[in-house]
Image (cartoon, rainbow, N blue to C red; front, side, top):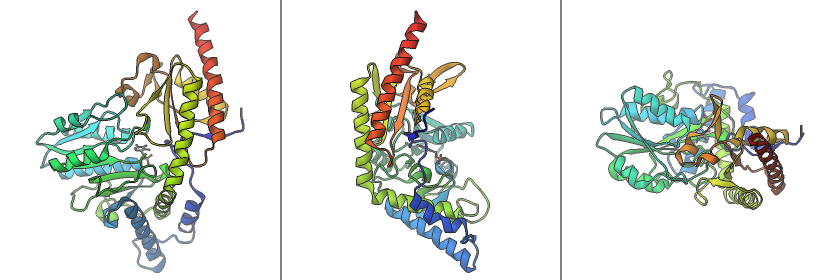
Length: 388
Ligand SMILES: *Cc1c(COP(=O)(O)O)cnc(C)c1O
């Protein structure tokens, strides 16, 4: 076992930034007041939450009143989709989404189907983009909501959000986007992009786990999903996770302060990795869009390789990465995203997602490429023996 740890799975989660933790610490210790209480330590907590709301609103170019804090990306997706669906049921019961959404969106839509809503799941092309013509054709008189993710968590493809927002606006349909992967990697102005609702999650941009935010444009009706007290303007009951919210605010501010430097760093590492893999490993294919993709994301499929074996052998070398295949009933099935982009059979089992973060270095790229060259050769030799 290597005592190295090379973390290359930033799409799964990121390490809490030290400065973010420092901002949070008082609210985990002596500033423990309930933000709904009227005495001074309560008011201090309320101010801290309000300040975080401003930090988020500044980044998205919206009003702080349009930001609702939640317990993460999944809850934000649920609140946006269920909230808007329930509240606008009289207008219609049709929702449009895509086949490559995160389970937080897909399973929310499936749940709504059971409750009598109708959902269209748009196909994507082989680079992971939805087709705008298909979106237009899917719109019906009873369509109330379009939910399309900003950037895909597996293959990194970034959608043409502005065009989707325009289509939704022209048709008078609400547009929600799961921007959990896009925050920090794309500049997002919800007004310019015509976004009506947007989900984010702090732990994907060096903030704490278990806290997220949802933007909903002023005037849009949406029901609450967690019922109880009046917190978050009655849209999300429960005593505020003050430390977490403070952390989210600080984290989003930091990642955008460093935006150009940070994203150039990711892009350099990612491009070098893609170049080196394509140069040194035969029979591979890059999944997702070559240019419209998240700067830190590289997702490759390798012929005649099992994703699980690859991950285990990388783990022995201290490398944390992710595979796009899941073992279901003994056979490796490609993920719903890889299936949707029409991955050829021979590539279906061996996918590897590497997602870079701010602490990664060029040495990490060299190390992971060296390791991959060695492991893939070994695995391919083994499978050859097997076939004989
Ligand atoms: C991680 C992720 C989520 C879920 O966020 P949590 O905070 O873990 O609930 C939703 N959508 C996308 C695209 C993600 O990458």
